[in-house]
Image (tube, rainbow, N blue to C red; front, side, top):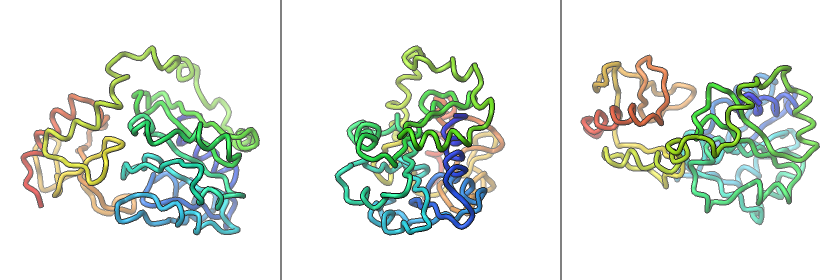
Length: 272
């Protein structure tokens, strides 16, 4: 599909009718409520734990007769906490008639020891699907290419909602094989999580997806200087959050050159 987000919309189109529900831990990927609302459904938000982790028992308890989908982003966007895909966990039995989409857009940034839902879940549960993308670790977001692995019946259902001419030829040819990418790109998933540590940032939880936070609020203007007026807008997209670097500059936060500019600037900002 055109990135894993397009596949997400295919799932919503295939399974959600007006009045149906989709359950997800929250906060999470902001495309989830948009895709569900587009189909006239209701997103049921299950609060994260005090440690910003998923509570699979609570997610399972939120499933009702009206639930059609469960979205699980792991590592979660934007909190970076993973959801361990342990098939022995009792919660998985709570989704017998519901399709569970495990969104692994940031999989390459997570600890491999956390497990692999493709190997751990797909052979045992025909209602589990796993979506991945080349946009993050491979730096190919503009090509728009993602993929999903699922039971044939699930694949057949979302294929019926496929937009014609979905993936262009360049996108199909570019990433294969992934090992052909340059060594710096292949090292990116393991090197990125450690970059903020030199600027005094600390992760509020294990940095499984390279997301860190420094106490206080940082606001940066277009010249790279701390500024009272910045791009940090509490409540944007329905939530507050740490400051971000923007100022009208579209860019990739994983670019080392941009990080080299950002982290020293952040270090000059006093904690709140």
